[in-house]
Image 1 (spheres, rainbow, N blue to C red):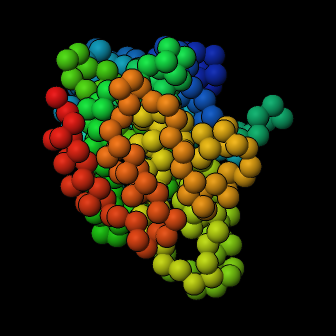
Image 2: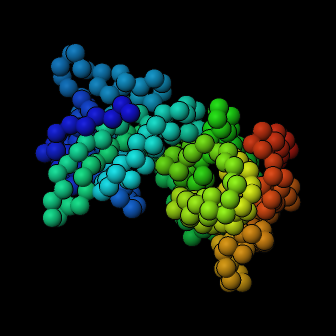
Image 3: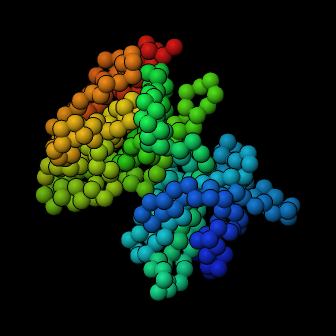
Length: 344
């Protein structure tokens, strides 16, 4: 798996109270915590480069792509506390899957290590994983949406299309692999945005913990229920495709589950919330029913409002029948046409 198990426990204990962390032979100082969720914590770290000439390049010499080298030595590091063999397998799978992708709109995994630690009465975990990524300090699309909502601000039509176009480009890379991979959790919280002067924001899709080969043949009730159970753990409810809520006992599932999530995400780029969360805020009821019936309502948008063509584009992706939903290549052709028409 390319993961290193080692007895560097004492060095890693420093993570809990600041201090230094080693990922393989490279040393990083924790600057501050950026986020946390479940058993994972994300930190801003700064590489401490050795003065020894033989290792002066530090972690940068491992990167396939020179553009991943940080100008100031800072990176994002995700630390995962692993309590059982199932969690260990999930982290190994995330590392394996992340290494399949190489695209400027997908967050690259730069380095990783998994170490075993002694479980004690205070800590239940037996392993810790460290995953190193480029850092994007402007936060996620979700973070940006919250701030914009509080100020009653909206992205321009051309920025909406540009952000969305970049997400499509990253997904196309995943969907065109052999076999095709689905991300399975496309949502604003998994899109990093970086603001650039005089240019639209840079959008990068991240978190491949739920990414799996996209095509599944469901041939029994138990297989359908198994898929639903998996989806309930791995695919965020407001962005989850109808076939993952209520899977038929005989179905061919493919990467177009992501197209549904993409349609919800385009709506969220415009209005700051998933269409089905918005529907529930308006009228209450069940999220699952709203999704299965694809009830889409449009908020009062910016002034002047977004073009009707953009609303139609969202509805085209939000078709409850997965088999009639467009594929990523069709989406890209369409977004390019809209961008040519509405960008200035």
